[in-house]
Amino acid sequence: RATGRQVATISTGHRQGACRLAYSRSGKVFVTTGVSSDDTVEVWGLDGVRRAKIRADTKEEGGLAGIRGVLMFPSGRRFASLGPEVGDVRLWDTGTGASAGELVLPGVREVGQLAVFPDEERLVTVTEAGLDVWEIATRRHARVMKQEGCCVIALSPDGAYLAASVGGTIHFPRVHHTSHLMLLDTKDWRVLATWDGPSFLEESFAFSPNGRLLAVGTFLPEYTIAVYSVPELIRTKGQ
Image: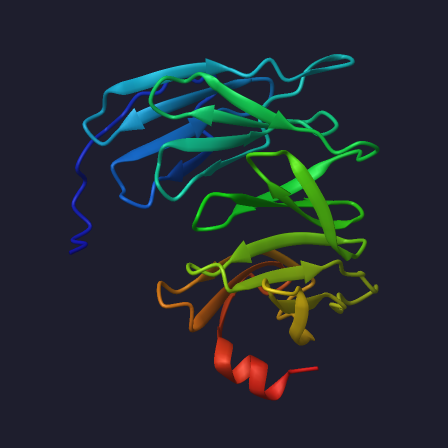
């Protein structure tokens, strides 16, 4: 049961502090990344002992660019790092820090976000062209949705649904959002529901453990968290 009690203080080796972290589902292991030009990832236990330190060497023309994201697999045995380069999605072994391969999308300028299915056999990537699903073992991928401006995604805990936000346009002098949210069935990638987002810019999604609620964190202009009933969305916002 959560009590709010601090259980540990950990001093990372990131030069300018830790910027991002991701937990395993068990809550016993987590990984941290730095900011700016820090291209390292550190693996930690809740006992404060660092299990591994990984240098991802995310270089691009003009110098180091750093790690832009990290995703822990549900089992905690592997995680993925997101670098700045084309197709720069790398997989790592959490226990040893050894490389477990990389994913390369030809012709893609940038990968924006990642999500992994509960069985850890497939990975979803967001690019400037849409959504791609990867078979991790074979490195084969298929584009399941062609959609420019898709920027934030989340999979439900059982992997049945994927939530996605699509773009937005600012209209001055006041800010009026034109972003759209989508709920997709991951069996056939059919769109189950679409609706206007609560803000111009959605920053994050999170499903409840039973997958029946979807929380949406916003940035501009409201700075709010909106919570939706997934069954209600399908019933009232369905295609």
